[in-house]
Length: 218
Ligand code: CA
Image (cartoon, rainbow, N blue to C red; front, side):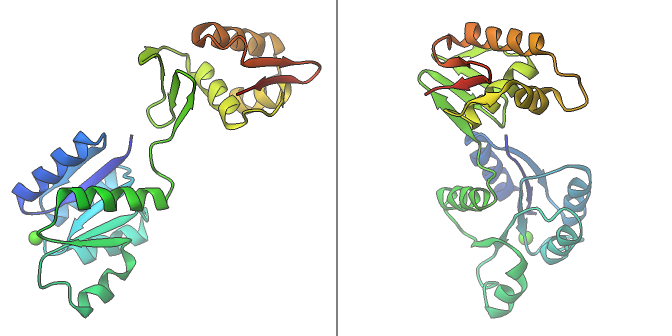
């Protein structure tokens, strides 16, 4: 799930943005002054920053500069009307986008999604028939019902999905899912494949490829 930091000193606006983005499935932290914003940036990892420019204590430009030196998180500036002159545009060059107050929430969401897409941070969801696999939340749904997978079963499923219709060698699968430091155990792998087939009813789709390994055929 994508995490967004909102730094905006007008509480009515920051609350509105938070409610809207959370309704779209994002997780949001809110800071109402620049110093709190910088503290959050230091402590947490965000997928996107929404920064107001005129802020108490530390302004949006300084936060952008701080971000550039530290995490280089994608950033959208929130500017007030009248701030969007050439000078501001020059200064916001390091940001990925900016939006001028007052704005429609729908427009803000569209810009947030566009920037996240540019950085490939959009929630990745794979679908096979009635199965949905969400990479960000590590959840699997079958017929709209949650299916509990172990972490290794999940990693194995994602690997098969990312290589669908390609036969993967047993050794390669084991190394990618269990790590190269572990000694290859065909029994462990075969058991996990059996569990996946059973839990997700994929007996016909996860094929055993003779002398090679496995393939998800879709
Ligand atoms: Ca402000």
